[in-house]
Length: 316
Image (cartoon, rainbow, N blue to C red; front, side, top):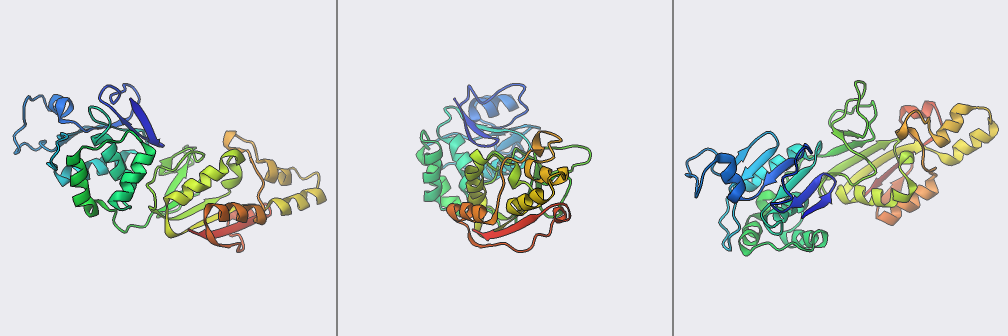
């Protein structure tokens, strides 16, 4: 059994938790047999051993963790698991597995995904996402008692989606294309859910990305962006102003560059425009998702020198 929860995050049982040749990072949340096999011991490891709580390889984290009915756990084990997942999930698949795939593995996934929520809200969200979730009383009691310890620090997370060759310092620069000319922090298909927990992002900026996203998926995409944003977070987007572009094309029918503002340059797969947006359609979409204080100030991106553009700013 292997279940995908969000992009790049999976939970699994013992049998499905060791895929070969995938390049995945794996959290082995079981003492027997994984921690024992990794360190080649039987029974119990002395508590003085430096790898007693966990042992980390390049793409494997072996946790000395069982699933008792009593809360017999160490905070350091969970801290290390979160650190390991955070380190790898932006660039590769992460699999969390335990023996049955029903208690420890989904509990760790819940901690990663929903640590910004209350414990009860996190439990409900995890059961909605993975109805088979059946945490033993020990791990459930431990997490409830220590939940506040795991809440993320008040760090500012800013995303620059569809960054192309514009790298913004202080942002996580995200694109699905990477080359010698393009520097990115996270390679990600922006038509799929962002690999961030709920309510974790302070600012999203996206310049001339939105028109490249398929209209059939756009509502799900903007709902996912809204999901990861904190309350009060801002979104800033710029894109071609479809109405003004049409006016210009009708007045200049032989200007191929203007027509490219409608259809995209089509230089490669990612350079096709899938939809045309005006202020009315865009405002209706954002309002329908839940955004407020929607404003259309003057655009600032370099595309304003090339084509009619619009800028939208909104608040969650």
